[in-house]
Image 1: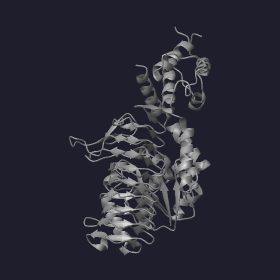
Image 2: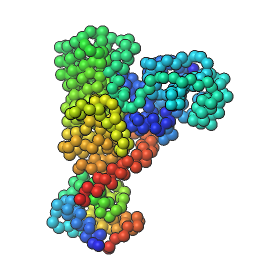
Image 3: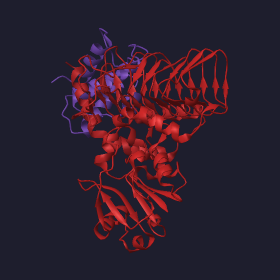
Image 4: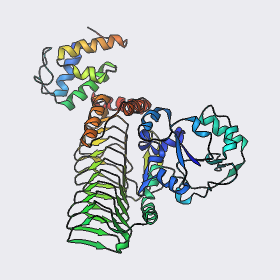
Length: 426
Length: 84
């Protein structure tokens, strides 16, 4: 059976910007792994194929070995087609059974189970036509499967997801090194230190309220405190960090200061002091010393977030920090308001005041306004340098994808730049 | 309407807080502009003249005189009326 993951609906993708600008939705992390890893573990397919927005197909092909946007992947196999935002833990769809299409009450296709013979009879000039054909010719079932709605839902659900993922991993104990003196609070069954991971002396692991998973090759330097539930990714380094509960730190990160209930993708740095709470941070981000975000308003009211630079969305939660896109860099002393949005590839040169809540992708925030700065060429050069320092390569496919993102995000960026320019000559 | 040269000089003087600006002045060496100032100057020129400038080309301009020529050309390309 082949699992088909599809992420082609702009309206849904926009709810996960800026993180979804440079990756398909199933690559978003929550708990100890990505949404894709959870769905694959749940469905247990023989293989997987992907359908992503056209602009990122070339780049995504460099990231995975499976077929990407290849319509021939829809024939010759029994198929399970999934909306990648389905919550794997609540997913109640059997991989076996009659062919059928599962829709929510609004008609959004959440899953399709299609037997090989039925798949061969469907129109398949492209994936959209294939799905329309499946919906019109196969039995439809109205279902009520939970899905992730917005990026902040992943953050707010991260603690519980960490506990679920730790239990599913089924590991505990010390396969790496824990140097004395170290303090472990709570049950040692709630702690796993993977091989080649090193916990330096004077570290506290507090697993009293949730599990702590330190993955292979990670280093926890002295005076760090890790509160469970939390996950520290492969080869990440904590530098005396106060790692509060509910954190997922991706691979190859460098984390210091205070971090609480946040998800950070791989290769991102927050070396220094400063608070990050209820935040979702992309890849290759660098947060300068003392960068701090608010995640709670003084009046405890629910936080709103602007995902398009115009319309605030009420999150319904009083705890929401920042959404920070891939390759964004903040200067020392950056202050982020509650529910801030920093697009992908932004450069923040802080002024000492809290930033506006929305900085568009590729925007350079200078002297209190959004500017075109030194342009995307300089941003690409910085990305190449940052990636080269970690043995990774900036590819032509990555550049083509980010060029497309640059064009897609031009309207909101140009509006912000024009607004900023007006203030300069007043 | 003031000329392009007069307008460029006025904005440069205001932004960089200098009393006198000459055409041969280098923004960095003579007027003390730092990289952040350059970004703001480009934004101010765009607002003043109602034009859009390519960042790489605009930031490659070294002197006030070259800025006058560059902006004059951009204004012509983008159909913006100017006094020369």
